Image 1 (cartoon, one colour):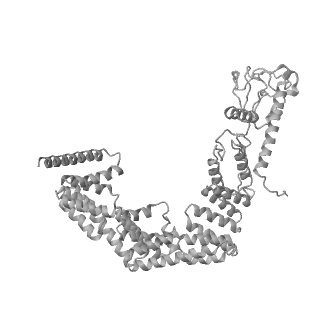
Image 2 (cartoon, helix red, strand yellow; image 1 turned 30 degrees about the horizontal axis):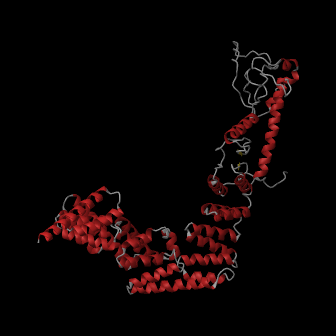
Image 3 (cartoon, rainbow, N blue to C red; image 1 turned 90 degrees about the vertical axis):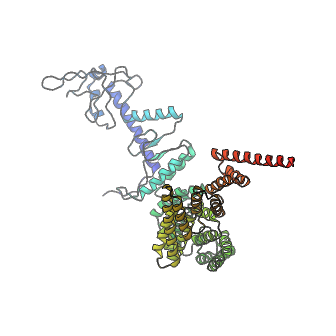
Length: 588
């Protein structure tokens, strides 16, 4: 029967390794002194060919057993040539060998090794020597007496070996801790305990940071310690590391609601709100009276635009929530309802105002609210703002499956069709077709979804056909193709600009200016359309109009040499025209 015991901690293992290191070093030194037959104070040199006289005189000092069981000894290069073998293939026993003809300094694996004559006898071989060499090398380089690392292989390794790297800033240590936490969930030690990283202790260059990491690794089996570490990472803004630590704590004890709630907070900081809701719901399921989890869950629902659920959880957390929280949730509910009603009436200004107010009240990551804003901006001919809304850092980016499951098929399909229209307005026709197709797959019976899908396909096809015709120098046919696309997608800035180029190629500069002006109405920052209009105005000798466009372009494209040159030419033409007019007036 064997006695069961708790697995030693990392720091305990470090103590064990230190003791083994000292014992092995002592054993190595003792064995070598015995082999040399001298005192530790004044060692003598030895060679492979001849043993010291003291060793020959006293056979007790030639016992190979004193060395043969030291598995840490390693082979060292021979300093003298090996004696020639006889015809029978047997080697003659050299002086200083034992009665079996083996060299005295045999390693445990049976391979002979000896020191060079010029090498001091006090310099010993084996694991202890390797350990000392590694330590001294590190101390010379770093100017410190701290250890680099100790592993379960009883070896002090220099710098990057082992599964944790002690970086100066601690970032790599955090990443390694995260990887270790993931590994702990995937494998078990033979004794049945979860892998705890024992034997892989890192000391940082800075004593404080190294101590914290050492304690972290030695307490990997304590979920409360992991939670505290996660809290510290969260406070420092390292949210991904915090999630990994909370995950490890949950693996060790999934019945603690605080672990789930804290992980939800870190996920929310990473923008993974739907996952955060799921973890918060688990915390509430474990402890229905957990006020903080209810309050956190209410805040998450509020941000996602689920006002009714937010109100419910705020009311469940009487100790954490305030009346202001409930009022904000009720305001979001009212704002969304008003915005949706205004959309049915096509009152786009009210839609935009109420949706923006809902965001201000807390629904900053609600896809429905964002879609209402973007659609209103499109209808108000503010395409650049609609595009910026979806491409901004705060835009929700949820997967199709998780978003459909959370918001429902209709809610996510509406978000997708608005996104498709924004892509079309920005000239991303292929993206628009793909997004509209996804919405159609989610809700094929919805007329609005079907209409957007057809429009996207028609506009993309017309633009592609127009581009092919333009490349073939068939400018009239290309102009007609772009016009067909504009019939399906009126006011599209890209199609208008492309048609303007065709008009310019055909010498219809007036029409080209009109199309460029139409594109700039919906997208004021559309530099290509502004440049085309300026060029057409130059051809029409409208110097002041072209000057205004070039002055805007030089602000947007300060390094563009063509714009600089064109601006100088227009300014010269305008000065010449004004000087000519002044001279004519003076003659009269």
